[in-house]
Length: 119
Image (tube, rainbow, N blue to C red; front, side, top):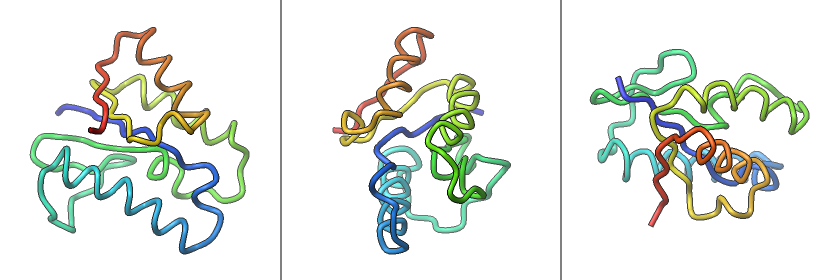
């Protein structure tokens, strides 16, 4: 099964419940429109990944969904081991405004992980 990680800006976008919902929607819409190419709402979840049509997809929100009020460093330490196991990483349009996504981008380049940019 092909593993895909979606990277984008999270910090500064999730401080209230409404902003958190918008942030989840941003990642979910990208996954539906550009990766799964469907709007099927109930995709099975296996660990930190959503699985559908031979693809296994995750992102920083999903990886850290069970944590609250942790440090940025803790969130990143949870994401990086999963990211480096992925076959490719998709970067949302806002990735350059994210300190974490910039680190993830550098890792992809250094580790030769395929990069896909949102158009």
